[in-house]
Image 1 (cartoon, rainbow, N blue to C red):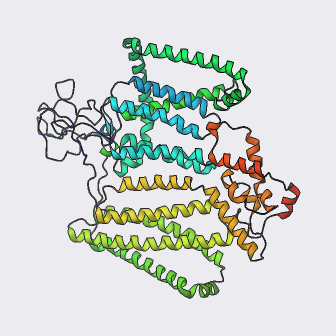
Image 2: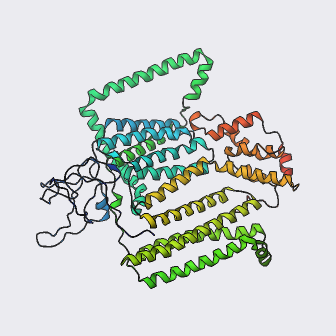
Image 3: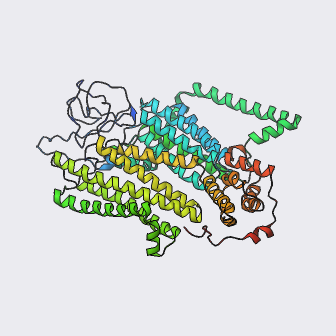
Length: 590
C-alpha cells in the first residue's frame, strides 16, 4: 500500500549564488523549484544565497522557482544572531510565485485573439468554436512560459493535450450533460499543465490558482501594454496597420463578390459569424470573459503558484494491534459478503429470490446503490488508515500492505458485483442517463483501487497524478462514447428482443424523446410508428434551433439532421399518445 513519504523532491536545481551543488534535501521552509516546467540547470543549489543570507534589496540572492525570474526571499531556517530560529512563513507566503517575466507581445496578441474568438464563436452555443477559442489562449500561455525561461515537461504536454481533447467533446456530441463535465475536466487539466502539481494538496488546489491569476494577470498585462506602447511602437504599429488594411480589403471585396454570386454569398454567410446589434452586450461579456481567462492562463504560465510547497503533517501512527484489528474485521466482513455473492452466482440465485420474495430486477436495484456507497466508503477508510498506519520499520510496512492490499482486492470483487447488479437492472427496466453515469463512476472507482494496489507495490509518488489522469481519461472516454447513443442503442435492442419473444414493444417513448440528437441513429432502427414517436421530441428540438452556424454545431446534430431529412417524422401526435408508456416505465425511477 502507498507509504507515507515526502513527495516534494524536484527534478531540477535552480541557480544559486555559490557555484556549488548542494547534496542535502531542502528544508521545509525553503522554496523549491517549481515542477511544472523544466528550467536550464545552473550551478548552485536550492536556497543558496551566496553566504549573505539577505533578501533581495540588501545584497542577498533570490531563489528561482523554475520560471526564469527571481523568486522571493528564501527563509533559510537557520538560527539567527541570537540563536533563535526564525518563524516559518505561512502557506500563503510559501506558495507565492516569483515575479513574472514581462509580458511578450505574442501573449497580448493571443489574449486579443481569445477575446475576439469568444465574442464571435461562443454566442450561439458550444461546438468547435470552444476549441478554436482555447487555441490562442494556449499559445498566449506558451509564449509567456517561454519568455520566463520555462520548458515544458512530458507531464505538462500530456495535461495540455488532454485539456484540448476534452474541449473537443462539445464539437462531437450534442448532449449538453456530457459536454459540461468535459469542460470542467478540461479546466482541471489546464491547471495541472500550468502549475505542474504532483502532491495531493497541489492536485486538489491547482484550479483555485486561476482566482489569483486573473486579478494579478490583469495588472501584469496592463504593464505589458504600457511597455508596448512606450518603447516598441515601431515594432508593433506596422502590424496593427497591416491588420486594419487587411480587414478593410476583406470586407470590401467580400461584399462585392457576395453580391456578384449567390453561391459565394451563401458560402460566405455560412462561414462568417452572425453578429447583430441585439446580442451586442452578450458579445462584449464573452469578449471580456475570454480575454480574462487567457490573461489568467498566461499569468499562471509566467509565474505559477507553487502548490506543492504545502505540506500536510503526518498523523500520529497507531500501534499494530490498534490499527490492524478494525481493518482485519472489515476484511472478514468483505470476505463473507463475497462468499454469499459467489454462492448466488453459482446456482443459488433462484433460491435467494424465493427466500427474499424479490424479483430479479428488485434484487439488482436493491443492491447496486449500497455497493456503490460501500466502494466510496472503502476509499475513505483506506485514506484514513494510511494516515494512522504504523511506520516503525519493515514489519509495519509489510503489515500495512497485507491488510490494505487484501481490502483493495476484496473491494474490486464488490465493484464487479455492483456492475453485475446494474446490468441485471438495465435488462429489466432499460438504461437511463443516471444509471449509465453511476455505472461509469463505479467502474472508475475500481480503476482507482487498482492504482492504489499498484502504488503499494511500486511506490505512491506518482499516485495523485495517475488518479487525475484516469479521471480525465474517463470523462473523455465517456463523452466520446456518446452516452445518449448508448442509452438509445441499449433500449432499442431491448425492444427488439421483446418483439422477437412476442411480448410486444417495451420502450418508454416519453423518455427517449428527451434524449439529445446523439440518439437519433439508434432510434432510427425502430419500426413505425414507434420510430416517429421516439424521434418526435428530438425533431421538434432541432427544428426550434433554426439554422445553427458551423462553429456551434456538433457532429451528432449534423448526423441527426441528415437522418431526419432523409426520413422525416410521419406519425401524428394522436397515434403516439395512443401508444402510451408501459408498466415498467423506467424514466420516473432511478
